[in-house]
Image 1 (cartoon, rainbow, N blue to C red):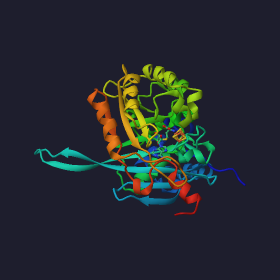
Image 2: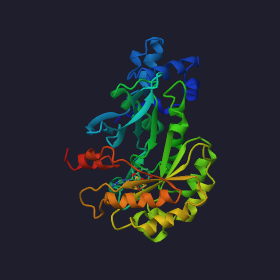
Image 3: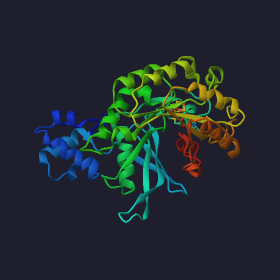
Image 4: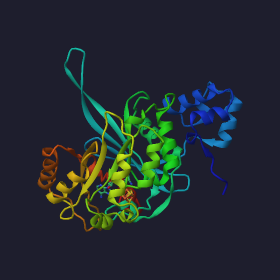
Length: 359
Ligand code: SAH
Ligand code: SF4
C-alpha cells in the first residue's frame, strides 16, 4: 500500500510559511481551507498552478470521510468520521439557544454552537462507565485530524467562518494522553487567519493525569480546564477510573491549584452521577470541602446508559437535590442538559452502534 498523503491541516500557519515561499501563500491557503472550506488544492485559484499540483501530490485537504450522521430532536448532530486507516471517531455539534438583544432592546434568539471533538481512537484510561474505553486504545489523532472534525462540521452546517463556536475536547479519548497534538490543534484552531476560535473558547476535559495538567498549565495556552472527577474518595474513584491509582484525588487538586485560570473563568469539575453509586448527599458534602479554595464550578452529568452496562441513570429528583446542596453552600453548580440524548451523545456510543451493526 502506498503511504497516505500528509495532512495539510497538521501544519500551523508558521510551518506552512516555512514550507511554501513566499510566506503570504500560507495565509491564502489557510483562507481557502478554514474560510472557504475548500476540500482540494485544485479549487485554490489564486495559487500558481504548479504550486497547486505540487501540493496535491504530497498533501491532502480531506483527511476525514463522513460515514454517518445522526440528528437529535433538539438540533444536535452527531458525526462519525473515518480516518485514512479505516478507524473511526465521533464529533458532535451541540446547539444551545442564547438570548441576544437587538439595538432597540427586543430579544432575538441565537443559536450558540459548541463542537465536541475526539482526540484519540479509543482510550487507554479504561473508565468502568465509558463506552469508548470498551473498545481499547488504537492510536492518537494528529492535530490535523482533530482540527478537521470542526472544519467539516462547520462546512456541513453552513456555519459561516466568522461565526463564534466553542470547542470541548470531550469526545473520544484522553486529550492529555495526546498532549503534543492536542496543544498543536489548540493553536491551529486559534489562528486568526484560520478558524480564529479563541483559546478561552476551548475546554480540555481530562480524567486527571496530574503531571500532564501541570505540563499543560506551563504551556500557558489560555484554555479552560475541565476535570472528570466523578467520585470524592479514592476507593470509589479507583473502581470507576483505574487511572486514580497513578493519580489520586489529592494530586489532581494540587495540579488544579497550580493551573493558570483566566480571571473571569473557573475550573470545571465534571461529576458523572450514577444511581446508587455516587448520588448521595454525603458525596456532595465531601465535594464541597474538596473544592474549598479553588475557583471551581461543578457540572453534574446524568449517566447515559447503554446496552450491557450495570450502571443506571439517576433520578431527576436526586440530581436536583445534589445540585441544590452545592449551590446553597455557595458552589456554582449546573446540571448538564442531556443534549442529544436521543442520539446517544455520550462519547463512544455512535461508533459502538456501528460496530455492532445497529444503525
Ligand atoms: N477523556 C476525557 C474526555 C473525554 S470523556 C475525560 O474523561 O474527561 C468526556 C466526558 O464524558 C467525561 O466527563 C466522561 O465521564 C463522560 N462520559 C463517559 N461515559 C459516559 C456516559 N455513559 N454517560 C455520560 N457521560 C459519560
Ligand atoms: Fe477515556 Fe474519558 Fe472514557 Fe475515561 S471517560 S475511558 S478518560 S474517554
